[in-house]
Image (cartoon, rainbow over all chains, first blue to last red; front, top):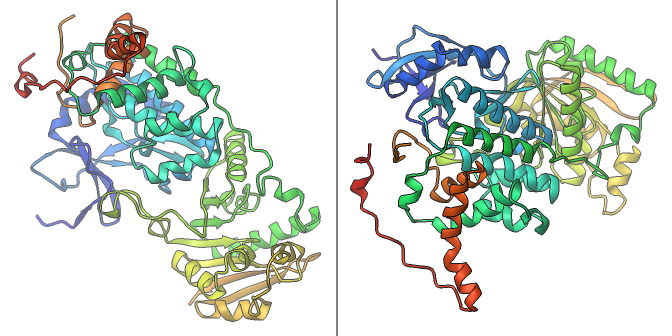
Length: 461
Length: 69
């Protein structure tokens, strides 16, 4: 039988199975080698326990033929994740919640005689504001005495970036983008403050001593190591210890660029309300199912999308704004909204083996609508991007665009121009419309009362 | 407890150093022993005021791995 199925690029490391796409639907093949573990997961109570608590993505067993019949045991169809995001795009609390979920799942597994065999941050996705494990094949049958194979990965993927973000500089979390298997522990050890080396637990053990031991034993196979046995109580101690190390790590943004942007905008409360109403009207006209709010700040206007049930990614360059957005989503149990830290002038690239493990931002599109409010001047003036190029990028990302034009006379733009030569002759309302006319038609145009700004609803040509 | 050699069905390389640190993190005394042994060369050299010279890596017999169970 020749069915057209495409194996997903990131899914090759674990021989237990892999993800493939057929007719646009995502399936996971479970291989024969994983048969026992899969049956144990499904019948031993762990699958139920985890999915009931929203910790593991639910799936159905599918009738569709496997993509690789020689290896196959079963094919399952997991619940769809609206948008795949990566740890280097998460705010501090998103990564922290993902870390704590991983540890809870490891503990829940042990209670049911299974072990979380890996601890990759890429196995976690956010669905309706909450982290969930998407790799159904992450659990193996626990063998008495076995140590935790995922320990090193956990420290590299979670503990190191969280410790660096909390104790050194939040921007160091971006190292996750450089190192695909998490931040090397010797690097984390070198960057962390000296006081974290003290003690017989916490970062002193999981990062510093861990890094030293790795160096000591690199390229060596030591008989003792292969004979390491750990009781289940010992494994639970490690999980507790990691939890106690991560819990107190906190990051409280202060003095970042736009953390308090909405308190010093050019909008009065009334104008903000009107702007929200215009945006809401545009959204209803375009009726998107999926959207990206680019430069979303803390997501004030993203809610015009998400509260209408539109699956929305709200990205911003400022980790403080994204953190604020995530904390609000978590506190109010909000749906359909995923905040991410993305620098639009240098968006997430395709990464990993053959550039196929992690998709670029655009590869994860297109969506129905992009929204760019109070963003154009940052791209065009701070980053010198030609307006036509901004339009092309939006057209590559979506069919519809809601864009706010902020004129030069606006004090926010004046601020950007204060310290540089004004080389932006084309930066006028007319020039803006002309630049966008290359890719888009204006469906509607609405000046925002009480400001000099204009909102546009565009449709791609 | 029987000695189990772990090169079974794990697809991740847990890393030798990481395995040993787990013993310590698990709060088991055995871990401290192994780590002390690991760093014993350095400690001795430090106490004697000498420069530490790492020992040559031991050559392992690969055949041992699967025969242990």
